[in-house]
Each structure stands twice: as C-alpha cells, then as structure tokens.
Length: 285
Ligand code: NAD
Image (cartoon, rainbow, N blue to C red; front, side):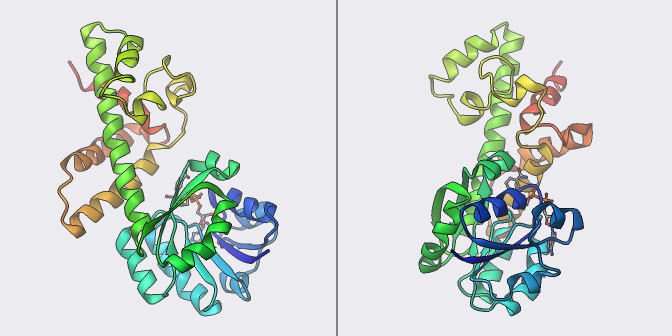
C-alpha cells in the first residue's frame, strides 16, 4: 500500500483516484473546486497538505499552465515522492518539468471517462526507466495497458501523434461515406468492403461515423460522446504546436485542426468528434 496524493479530481481524476483507493492505497485528494473535493471525500485543504508525506504524487489537470503552476508548490512539499503527471499537455512543458524535477514521469492516458471508471485506460509514459518500474503497479490500478514510450516527454509525444492520426483517419472515413452516399453506395456495403480491405482503420471498424454498421458507435446515439470534439481540438492544437516547435510537416494534421475548429464554431463542440460527418456533408453540393 502506498500513500498517494491525487491532485485534480475532475471527470478523469475522480474515477482514477477512486480506483487507486479501491486497490487498497491510502489516497488523499485535492482539487481547487469544492464540489470535486466533496465528490472524492478524503481531501486535504491544499495541494501542499495533500502531498506532505506522500510516496507518490499524481496530477490530472486541464492543461500545461495548470500543471506547471501546480507542481511549483507540490514539488517543494514532497521532494522525494514519485511524481507522475497524467494530464494531456504539450511535449515541451513535460520535458521542462522533468528537467526541473528529475525522475518526473509524463503519463497521459487514452480511454476517456469510461476507461477511467472501468480502470481500462492506456497509459503512455515518458521518463526514467527505474521510476517507470516504480510507477507501473500504481498505473495498473487505473489502466490496462501501461506502455513505456521513452525519455521525458515521450508519453505526451505518443499521445499527440496518436490523436493526430485518429483525427485525420476520422475525417478520411467520413469523406469515404459521404462520397459513397453521392455514388449511391450503401453505408453497409462500403463498411463490408473497407473494413476487410486496405481502407480499414479504427475510425471505420470500431467507431464508424454513420449509424448501422457498428451498433455501439456514437453515430447510433445522435453522436453523444464518446470523445467530445472540444477535447479533440485541444489535442490537435498540441500536435500542431509540437509539429511547429520540432519542425515536422503535418499538412493533414493542420487541415484536420481547421475542420474541427470550424465544427466547434458551428456548435459541434459537445458532440462526439465523429459527428464532423454532419458538417462535411453540408460542405458538398
Ligand atoms: P476536468 O476539467 O474535468 O478536471 C480538471 C480538474 O482539475 C478540475 O476539477 C479543476 O478544478 C482541477 N484543477 C485545475 N487546476 C488545479 C490545481 N492547480 N490544483 C488542483 N486542482 C486543479 O478535466 P478532465 O476531463 O478530467 O481532463 C483532465 C486531463 O485529462 C486533461 O488534460 C484532458 O485533456 C485529459 N484527458 C481527458 C479525457 C476525457 O475524456 N475527459 C480523455 C483523455 C485525456
């Protein structure tokens, strides 16, 4: 059993902290929001108080600025604790933090709120291998796939690359269905062919953006998320920021970001990201 401080008890952090407690750890939480503190129950009055005496400190916060600000006070309060940030933030901030706080791990997740609740998240981890080995049993209480991706920042890098690919493949899948509609080809026929051919991808075969072929996909429930478009825009912003900072050409990633931003401007932000098919349809003649 470890004494764990969990900072950031929002949509993701709350179920993750609960799963750590369920696994038998002594978890003390903190969130700036009073309702979030009340939802978890066992909370300290400040972040510094939560981390005092902790073996491990985990943060699950909205963005890079929050993470930087939080760790300024947290690191002083628990200098020797295992430090893990599970938020999705930019690669450069993750690398900076690890150089200021040696041994710190970046460990963003995929799997969404359902994955957090069911402890089936995938963790993509960057940082020191020995620290990763220490962190793995804790992460296993919250997730199913725990992958060490490389040095500090590699977890955020993996997340940025994966989600950029996901956004591009979703737009491509939507375009294929829209062209099929114009050509008089049924959704089911395109699905049958493409899911067994070279067009196969997760956006098609697991998360199909039209209702019917994959009964569990958000298209079958009026595109309720799932993975909300606002979150996809955030992640695409991070991948484009990384592409610019590190000099990678990602023209389709850039275009996917523009399309998803347009969809948010059209009121699509709270719909699942596969709902972009409704905007793309409207762009045709
Ligand atoms: P959220 O907004 O629901 O929760 C963030 C919490 O952090 C809030 O309760 C907020 O009050 C708290 N907070 C902010 N600054 C703080 C500070 N200095 N100290 C203590 N608490 C502070 O966000 P979320 O959906 O839980 O997402 C958290 C992270 O996980 C984000 O980086 C997001 O991109 C990533 N993520 C989210 C999902 C998802 O489906 N929601 C999926 C994968 C990754």
